[in-house]
Length: 296
Image 1 (cartoon, rainbow, N blue to C red):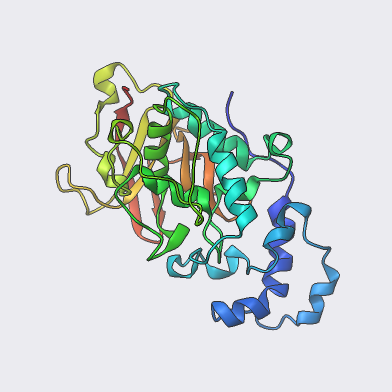
Image 2 (cartoon, rainbow, N blue to C red):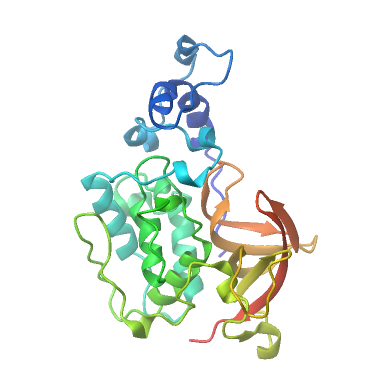
């Protein structure tokens, strides 16, 4: 079953309020504030934060930061956030040898489909947080040699880390997840690191074999976009990666991946969405370079 977007509008309501009432916090921590010409008192016309975001009410809205990576998620998460993140990671499928199963699980978390399982609204745990780091995203990097905490926290580009973690999780013989007081997992055994061990999307450019050579692409293979002008053989470089789900009637690729902007919330999150063969972001133009077959 395809992982589909929720239509609750939960973040749309929060965004308007947090841009205003978060002005004092943003002014202190990010040198940001409310939009010009908007009086703080006008925040009173908005309803209270929805229940799924009340725990994050002390943080400025991620949209107000314009996703500048050195302004996101480096502060210590709270103890209950660390525990919730651990439970979410532990709930992911394991031992299936199908990384797409793991990816779909996290997509379902982001849509609120598993809220009843966890007894709370956990949708925010598959997106970047603006002040405290999200332990779920930080732990995706445990499937790579990249250490994001000391630099950008969960603002570090994490699409390749997500794919690598899904690969590793699909090979785990046990579902148990242990973390330290900072919410960080122990190093993963080398036997689980069958991905690229790199948080660079370009590390997948020549990984495994081309899907076309294996009779594909098949659902769960890895789509690899490369930023124009960065191709140098198999050398890693910027771009984007996600799992192949299929094609749309318009010819776009339906991709399930991490660190992709959710059009409904304006957060970079685990999202299933169509992506064109060529797209442009703040870094430049990216073109689909390869589809890599997943054989585990």
